[in-house]
Image (cartoon, rainbow, N blue to C red; front, side, top):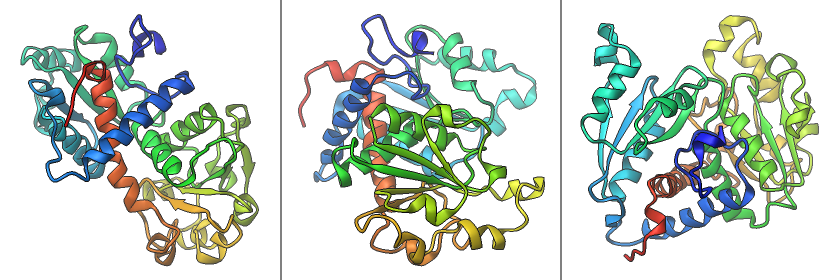
Length: 322
C-alpha cells in the first residue's frame, strides 16, 4: 500500500492506512498537528495554506462527527470544500464509481476524503484517480480509520508525553472495528510498552496476537495498571447476529464503570472514538468524569486532519506564517 501512499521522496501522497508507515512519519503528523492546534486558539483561526484547493467529502456511509471535522479542517486551511450527497448522486441511477470520480475530477478538485462500508475502497479509488489528486481514508469497512487513530495518538501524547512507557487497553468490539486496527498499528509503530485488547471471545478476532497485542477476556484483568483506556463503540446492529446476548449483559461484563477505571493507573485517561452508547459500553459518570478526554479527542481531530490534508497536498513543504 505504501507504494501508493508515498511519493518517490517518501512523503505522503495519499493517507490510506497506518499499517506500514514509519514512526518518523507518524511523529511528523503529530508535530504538524500540534502547530495547527495552536492555530485553533487564535482569534482568527484560518490560514491560506490550501487557498485555491478544492476538497470533496465522498461519504458513502453516514458520519456526522468525522465529516464535520474534515469540513472544518479544510475551511481553516482556506480550501473550498464540497460535501457530496452520495444517496442523491448519479451512482444511485446506475453510474459506475469510476465514471463518477472522473466527472468530479473534471471539476478540477484536488482531494477526495472517502468513507465507505467496503474495506479497500479508498485504496481502490487512489489507484484510479488522476495523479494530481490525493485520497484520504475516512474509514473503510473493517479495514482502517487512520485519521481517527492519529487524533487519538495526538491526544495520548498531549496527556502522556513519551509513548514508550505506556500500557494501553482497547476494549470492546475488536472484531468489527476499523478504529481498533488502526490504533493497534499506530501504537506499536510509536513504540508503546504494551497493547492490550479486551472483550468477549465472540468480538475478538482469532490469531490477533501477531499484530502485537495481548488478549484479555476479563475487563478488570485487562485494565490493571494501564495508562490509557480506549473504549470502542458497540454497534447495535451486531446484536442481531447472535454475537452478544443483550446490551444489558454486555454492560455488566464489559461496560466501563468508575470501579473498573480504579484498577488502572491512577493517572489513566479514558478515550472513546464516538458516538457513545451510554450504559452499553461506558457509564455516563465515566464519560463525563475527570479521567475522560473524549471531547478533547473531537477538538484534536480538527488539527490532525488539517495536518494530514496539508501534508498530502504538499503544502507543509512551503514556508508560511499566521
